[in-house]
Length: 185
Image 1: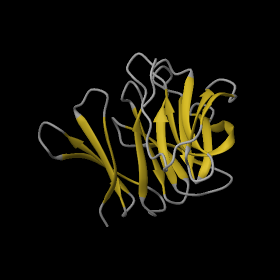
Image 2: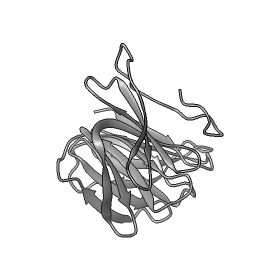
Image 3: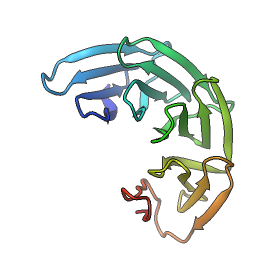
């Protein structure tokens, strides 16, 4: 069933993989051996993975719109979250400055989650398929619009759209901030 999602830990010592069988596996990069295996409750398939900034948590998203947060040391499931409008989780990212803030994008909805409160804090005003935090954690870049051709810069605290970059001729599949956050590709 294949590998559908991968993520390196912030230290670079672990690699997380997930795929069609619903398993999330943490690999020791130095030995190449599986260090820990975590299984989702309903193995529909892992479509997205993200480590917290300190590497203590790993989030996985499924094709059914369920988001799990795992303890990377013990492998224990810390929480399970589900959006009101389920759909494949296309992207996940913890805030680089707050291990308790997690952004997700699932079939048109960009959401910000509070991991400690185990709740969705807000959704973006518009539909989106990708959410990426800026290095300072204050801005989310989202891919939105008809045919996923618009990029919006959203205030992570309020959810308000600050800037709309429109007019791409093709679908936008990814975005990335420069290290200092001054540029977006």
